[in-house]
Every structure is written in structure tokens, then in C-alpha cells.
Image (tube, rainbow, N blue to C red):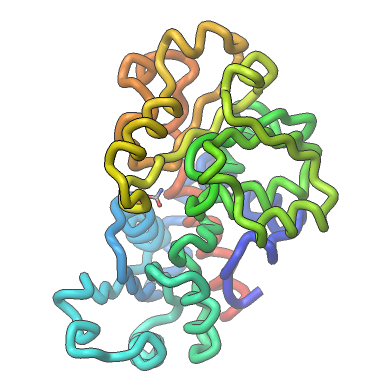
Length: 302
Ligand code: CP
């Protein structure tokens, strides 16, 4: 594929190709150090990011290349009203590949129609975040294995793009997915449709206690405060979807707790030092996984 836009385009073969390449990077990072010397990656982030942006930058530099960064919306000509289509058409002339984050769902797909260099979706509104999914799958594979997997995915399933991509990609594996959320934040119809079409094994719950003891992996996400018109309603709901040491007493000793981060207060800091916590390892896996992805995309487009 030239572009990576949603998790729907990822086959099991594609995923294993990236994860196996990431494992090679992890085993021998030095052998990748000059592989893409002289290559420039364009970063167009129309929304804030710490992990995705910095790990793409680290990845490109660790492959011997460099980045050209549009900067923030406020410091770029987006501020003067330049369109997304014009922005990406200009930046593709400066670079060999593009990474785009944008607040509108479908923005990456639209932008990809204007460029010839590989374009990677780094998050499009409440749509998809496929590179997060690749590092999530890498982390799951290392900790629990991807087949015969029972995973709980909890929090804001409606707007959470990391959830939409992960749930979709997991249909390539023998996984049972338990979705845990308030009624108002259940998976959107489009993602349900994709899971149904793929024949995924799916259950829905409003209470984590119903499923926690069965889980190999618990993937926690942030309840997005900005989605709630009523502050009291936000606090009531958010309080019910928090994990602390007390909650995890009912979990298997082998449970892997993940979170795409940033977290607010969904996971109590007392969990951080336990064997359950894998969310910082997960964030660190962003570098080898994005190195692997860039290596494959640039190899294909060379
Ligand atoms: N997980 C993730 O996408 O984090 P950032 O928003 O910091 O990139």
C-alpha cells in the first residue's frame, strides 16, 4: 500500500510484516541506522500530539533521515486560511513521505488523493489511528500473544479513534473483544458494521467487573471531557471507568493493562509500578514500530 489511512486496509499479513520488522529493529537497531539516510519525512499535525509526533520524528532520525515539521496550526499558513489539500500538495514537494493528524474524520483519506508520496494517518478526528494500532498489536503480541486473546476495551468507544482502529485490526486474529462503556459512549455504527462483516466475536458491557477476571488484556481509554455538554454528567461517568488497585484484585495475575495515553485519571498511579502496567512500554514501542512502518513504506515507494 502507498498510504496507511485506516485499520480496515491492514491484513494479517501486513500486520505481521510490520511487527516482525519492528522486532528486527528492537533486536538490532544499529543495522537500521543509515538505511534511509537523506530521506525527509513531513509532519503535518493540525492537532496536539506528544507520542505520535515525537516517535515518528525519533523513528525517521533513527533510520538516518530527518523531518520537516509544519509546526502548529497557529504558526503555519493554515492560520491564513490555507486548505488541507493545498498544504499537503506543497509539503509533498519538500519531503519523501507525509504524516498527517487532523481533527476531521476522513481528512487523511481526502488529503491522500492530492499526493503521490506515502501518506500516513496519525489520527483523523473520531475516525482511525492505524499506527497506534500497530504499536498496540506489537505490545499485545509481546505480552499476551495475538491468538486465543480475550481483550477488554474500556472507556470512550464512540469517539476513541485508537479503539476504532484496534477493534478493526483485531478481527484478523482469534480474539474475543469485550467492549466496556457507558451507554452513551458505545462503539459507533460504522465500526460495529465492520466488526460484524468480519465475523468478530464481540460482547458489550457497562460494568468492567462483569468481564475483568477473564481478560488477558485490558485496554483503557480516556473519557473525553470535551464531548460532554454537562460537567456533572462527565464526572459521574468518568468516575465509573477508572482502574485502581482495588479494581484489579479481581483480575488474573497475568493481566496486561494498556492505555494509548495521554491518561487523565482513568488509571490510578498506584498501578504504574505493578506487573500489570504496560502503557509506558507501549508508548516506547512507538519508535521501533514506526521505524518498521517507514522502512517498509519507503522501500515500496523507492
Ligand atoms: N496515543 C497518542 O496518539 O498520543 P498523542 O496524542 O500524544 O500523539
